Length: 555
Image (cartoon, rainbow, N blue to C red; front, side):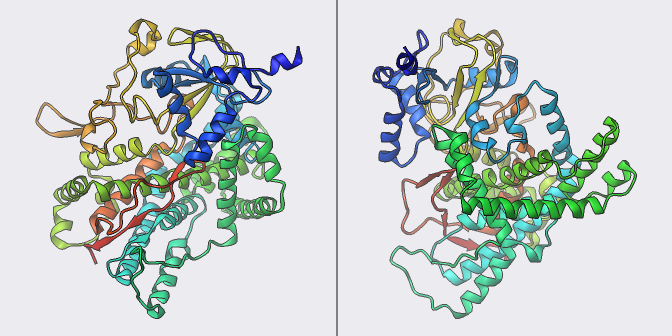
């Protein structure tokens, strides 16, 4: 009887792999075989839907547990569940378990319909307000991006036409930005400026020799201990995301010497930065908010204001502040840097789109173009450039750095006419049919009532698999080109009350950095192209490298 309960138990009417129900480990052997053969695992989920030719399927990924994982790839039903059916579905176990060992008091680990979730969102609210983004985040993004431009101009001069890998440069620049917005970071102390000085010194002494693969092997300056600790802890989460026992796997890793040491460094850094922020507080909350110059300073002001309202002492060194801060650091650099890496590779291949974006930027900034000078922050953030918006959106659509997202049914419900019992985990799949492949037809009568009224369009099956920024553009009544984010599905940031907290920051970074890169460089075809692109699966789906060969346009 006990053994029988361990075998998978399919939900009626939903396709599944027949061999899986005869194994205690369900689909795990097939999943592992796929990973061994392909070197990646996230595409396995969409492959099951393609195999069954169905927008819904079920797999069995929990050993000794008969419950299925329901897969969905229909973009209308996914968006409907995320944005309108959040009383039926809450955060999934996969992300909560993968992040929970490291960040037990961060909002990803907390159920939605609770005062605690609302408190955490309110605690971090200031960091995504337009005032903070425009006055604190945007200047740091621009300053750190200019440092990145200087680094690549130096590398281009040294490489003399050879390509070079910039994946780590993008990662460091994004890390500089999130550190600067969190704690404050002088430009001279940034990872990118330090790498620039090291690269210039290396260029003075290195002998330039062509390599067989035409890639110049620049040295990579190591991160400092605190930066490396954050990177190591970020990478540890990906282990949980790949594991059938994510929480336990992550919990054990965090107690082994390397990560235990990283946690200690992170805790000491956070404690020091909080003490510095608290020391700047003045008695008036309103004045303290006006004086705040970093994300952490805003956070401690809000914690003190909440404490005064609730009649308690501020908990500046509480676990929830430490965890929310680390979550902000992790989320604030990983997605953006990898999206930009993919985007540069796409624009290198799509030279027509790159040239068009360059032309649109020069049309938008005629005085800067005439003077051949650098774009200012005000110019970028105050100018509407529909094609720039379209390129950013298409990079996010095409790269799908977060191709799966989980939810859990909190009541008995239905999806596409199929009964979904309370407690069932549901996985939304963004890297297959409906997103990058032709979508499956769905009987309109099987849709939820709210899904039937969706205004999101569908992509043309003929070019859904291609990088085409123009798909996001319309012509308005006056004949002007306008950006339309509702033209078709793009769910990288999720949606609804649990949608990506840092979405506004990510878009701002993408716009500013991409505008500066295309203004300053022409990204030339590689002499030895590497196709298909290699993939690494960590928290996000990363390219294994980001090779560029550039012509500098603005000295």
